[in-house]
Length: 95
Image 1 (cartoon, rainbow, N blue to C red):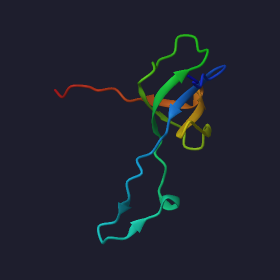
Image 2: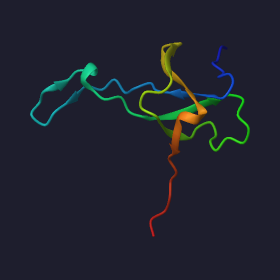
Image 3: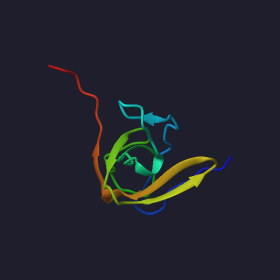
Image 4: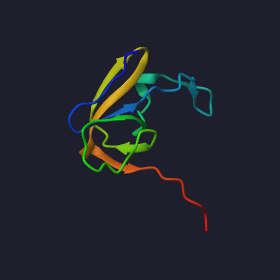
């Protein structure tokens, strides 16, 4: 089995999108080229980072024009420098 392992201080994110067709309220189909790409992704692997604030499986928010997209075994991934991660999504309880 092959897997991608990020090197140095990079993080591998799964950016595989849902292929569902999106429409406006009036029924106009929105093409993929007009959609804004989400900046949230699931962490798949972490490179050589000392004391990372994330673990595999976390969902993170990253800088808009950061990283390098790649396709591996029909899934889309992005390698992002650890410094370009802005936040981690954490479940909290309502008070």
